[in-house]
Structure formats: structure tokens, C-alpha cells
Length: 270
Image: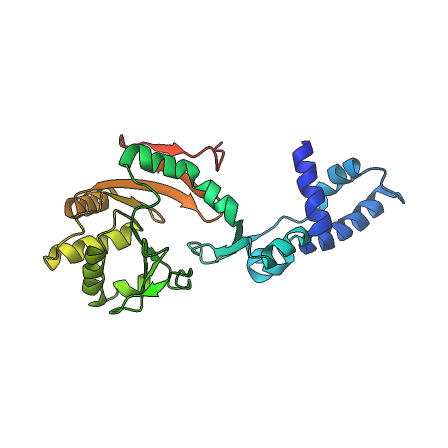
């Protein structure tokens, strides 16, 4: 067993309530089975107790998320150094995911490198994106709501335009398209289904597109070739497929040749 794995298990068993409880039960079972009164070292303890620790299931985290917080991170959470996020629930079960704010920024470094290298997109450029209905509207000291539609917010000094996905329902979508064109984002971060709805709305209602938009990054859903073609035909800009998850952030992004490149600074793929 590697030293790293031992350290992870020891950390969990000493500081995480879920594993503290199960660790104590595992010690009891191991002592009974081995017929000994004392465990000699932390190394042998880790090796011998690992098979007795329960396999973690997703439902365990969903039902009792507080049981998985290490006491070592409580202070940082209270100091607002950690952001609480949650998965999209594509499997039917959302789980809470926590990131240090500094780590979240660091995890985007490689993605921003490719955005700038291949598509000339910069973090200071204007961006439009959609957020989930279950999420709160993005907020910072400069946040302002759109005068015509409360589902649209502008933040980071007006550089980012956040739109609630609920706004794509019915005739609301025409107003959303007009607002996006008025905002003139340099790039958009969208799910393929949202991007397709926008493209069809622009096309079917003969609406002017945001001509400043040079790049659309599609993520969160499988990108079918015909959907990609329909989006590109309307917006007339570069389309990039990006794959990631809340737990690891970006996993892979696409170059101009259409190949997905693994972001090795975030993940390892076996």
C-alpha cells in the first residue's frame, strides 16, 4: 500500500465523522477476529483495517453530507475561503462539492491557456452563460439585474451576463436573444441544448445575432454533430466542445483540429 493512500485513510479515520464511526467499528471487528488486545502500529492498522471499512455509496453522501466534512476544514469554510457547489444531478442524485476558491481559479489555468491559444479569448472579455434553475443568481458587489428581465444578471462590473435556464421557456426566449445581442458577448459558455434553442430562436424569428461573439464553448451534455452544425450555421463563430464535471472542473477541451486534449493539471486518465 502506498504511503499516500495510507495518509489519506489515516486522515479520514481521524478527522471525518463518517470514517471515525466506521473506523471504531472496524477496530472492534479486527481485534475480535485477530484475537489480540493491541494493534502495534498505524501502518499495520491501516493495512489490516482497509478491507473492513465500508464501501462508500453516493446515497451516503446525499443523505448525510455533514458526516463527510473533515474538522480540519471547518475554519476555512467559516472564513469564506471555500465555495459550496453541487453536481447537476444527471444521475438523479445531486451531491455537494466544495472547492477552495484559489483551487477553483487554479483549475481553470490550462483551459484558459487553450482558449487564448486557439481562439484568442481572454478572461477580461464579455461572457454570456446560463446557470441552473436550482442555483442562486450569481452575486458580487457589482451585480445588477436586467431592467426588462429579472432572470438576467450582470456581474463582475458588467463583464459577465448570467441567465437562468428557466428563461428559455416559451416566448421568454425571444427577449433573451435580444438581450444577448444587446450585450454583445465576446464568447458564450452554453449547454448544447441551450445553444440549439438560441440558434433556432434567432433563425426562426429573423433576429440579429451577437456579431462580437467569436467563440462558443459547449459543455454539460453530449454534443451531436448535427447539433454542432446547426449552432455554427447561425452564430458563424468557433465552436468548442469541452468536457468536465463539478468535482474536477475541466477534464478535456477541444482544439481547432477537433481533438479533445486531456487537462493533465486537473485529472489523470487510465
